[in-house]
Length: 101
Length: 43
Image 1 (cartoon, helix red, strand yellow):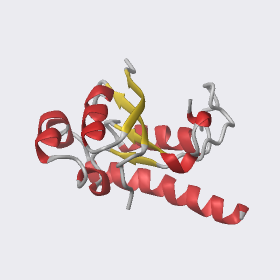
Image 2 (image 1 turned 90 degrees about the horizontal axis):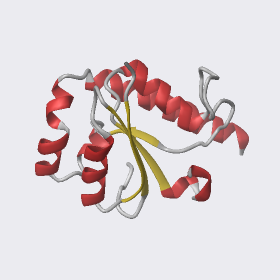
Image 3 (image 1 turned 90 degrees about the vertical axis):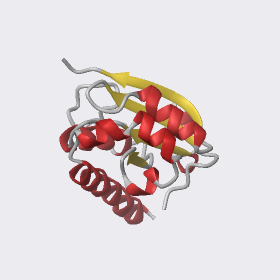
Image 4 (image 1 turned 180 degrees about the vertical axis):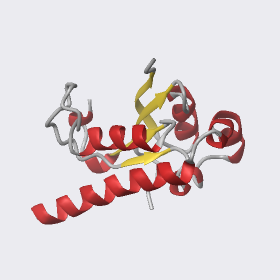
């Protein structure tokens, strides 16, 4: 699926509940499955990945949609830790792309 | 900053977090095209 499109046209949005699960998902869609257990082991898709609660994403969602679909779950999550985990994976990915070019 | 408008979105939700359908609904109304939507469950 991801390989059908150009990575710059695609965004992966996560709804994972913890920083650890967010990091795992984010790594899986960028550098490949870190647990080496799934089909994406060793497959670096290099996709941009964000969590739905991150400010950059939240700012683009209509307030009523966010309130209806996300806000309640956000209250039960450690959103800053999740944002930090996903940001770290993105930055690692960006640095890796920089090294390649 | 990421711009969702016109992007092809892969929505990966989790049962104990935000579900894929909810992410897809929000992203779609923000102008994105949903190409995959999944809700995973790890129990």
